[in-house]
Amino acid sequence: MSIPSTAAQLVNLAEGEGGNHQSLSPFVTGGGALLILLLLLWITTRFNRDR
Image (cartoon, rainbow, N blue to C red):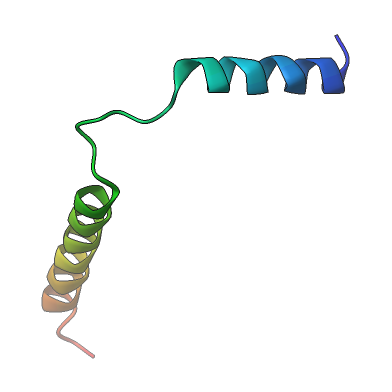
């Protein structure tokens, strides 16, 4: 298999699956990820009090 034919097959596979689920909102997903990262940052800074 050559790289261009493999890439074309992967593109066709990705387009066929759709990729977007109706129950997943990008704003909720992004906001949740941001909230989790901010929480982890806050926890990290609480444990690093020697600075």
